[in-house]
Length: 186
Image (cartoon, rainbow, N blue to C red; front, side, top):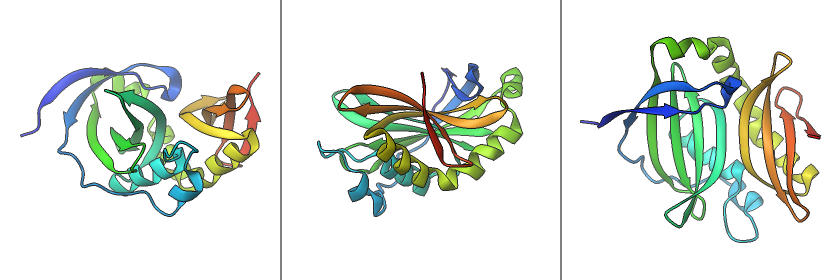
């Protein structure tokens, strides 16, 4: 039986915190990223964000809310939050091998559920199909590698806020997944 524990899940989606109950699932079978792994690999051998998202979506289908490169116990991993109906699943992907390490299902509870607009969650699932291509375009335009991506709302539109590591330092950018337009933040 899965261990159930109450946690706070800081959902950058709509920039509001949400109380959730997390159920830790048994680690998903190891999967490897699709063919984009070679195209998105970094110079230090890490898989890129596009390959990490593909690996996560092979394990859990849904809309990407957030993806971020983290260091846990000396191991680099991609943490990817995926909206699936009324749950959010956190998928951890090994940044060196592309293998899915674990998935945690987080059920949105009670009052906090209203913070999540069902239409926005549905939109995140719809726009995630073009996300891989848009991410590759953003990395090319920025001349670096994306280390963080968060779904946000600006002027009533869903956009992804990006952090990109470049030779000149970190750049903040915005990606409109509906158009593929990438703009630098001031």
